[in-house]
Image (cartoon, rainbow, N blue to C red):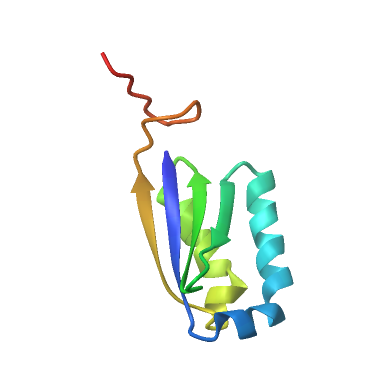
Length: 100
């Protein structure tokens, strides 16, 4: 299954993330190397949200990532949601649907 981890970012995200960025990126790259995290990043203009794209059998993997993330633990991320993403188009879509 595919999941999106949607982070709400603190108003001072750009100023405060530096202190925890290395730890956050280490966690993210380790998840990527295990095949769980496909890609992730923050939006700009405004920098108020980020999205991480996961592939996993369960949302528990995504929840565990969020709960271990230094950004969440130190208030750089102010809230999050885990959403199942029903991918239907693309070579890596979980449930590809082609037109008839």
